Image 1 (cartoon, rainbow, N blue to C red):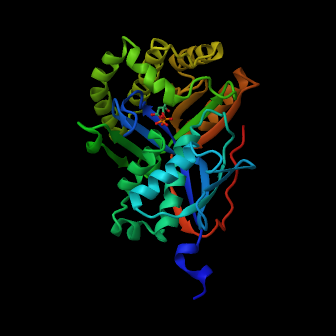
Image 2 (cartoon, rainbow, N blue to C red):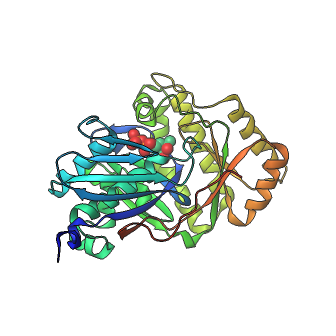
Image 3 (cartoon, protein in one colour):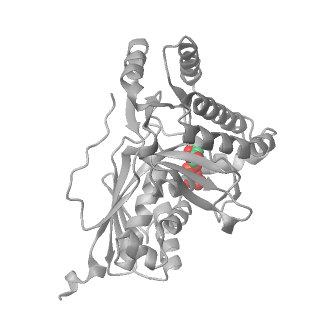
Length: 356
Ligand code: DP6
């Protein structure tokens, strides 16, 4: 076997979808250990994903290619990607330089979290490149179960942990940083839900979620949010179990508004809403009350709106939005099965997500 054929020299490719939180992760008890203030619960998406290829290289500097730009760790050692590679090498106790090539299938700034899909894909492909293994079973034998991979991913970006699973995913904060749990509570096949993202602005957000998590502790509303989180998680669990879209929708909207109320009253105050955000959610509520729009909104750390609905209603809701907001740009996605990992480059083609 020549050197190039050795498994450790292969490249490995991961695809990982983004996810949309129904109960938001907002605030950290420990930023270093990525221990969240409250449990969160999300739906993993399908089309909005990141594709990342990682291979071992000679030398002692890492290289990262993204969106036509190449950076290396000797020039930018504090880059988030290089810090995560460093963390993974330490965890696995395998010291090898790596070359990473990554791309998102969805437009940046569209309101879909690229750090969730990005760090999930980076973690998976890096673990495969470092260990030379890419099958879930083999990784598990090495102590790298899917849950452990989720915990490794959340160290890069908290929400990335939930993208390690498909379907509906619960990230439990636990009583200590070590007692956190990330697990799938139902597969995608359990309930065909969709996410219609309404893009109101594609400008980069003014405050990163990492900084806004910190600001939450200064909000007088934060203790009330944390006190109410366990019962909201319980409610969402039973809504998912019973396919109760009305009740799920109410909980989702309340949780998003509560998160933004905490952000707006934090120290410093962080307001992600644009005037159009408020206008659009008022429209959603009145149309829904009138019986015309079976959709419920949620909003992440930005001004764009995610409308959650049952998949069978996507065409109706899209047409309704387009007739009232003709200039709106939409991304249509749905619940998905989670990440994939393989050896080599991707042979199958993956289509880009476009605005509707
Ligand atoms: C509003 O996972 O982006 O999307 O851990 O600092 O990288 P870091 O934060 P991040 O926060 C996500 C915040 C959110 C809610 C959520 O996805 O739960």
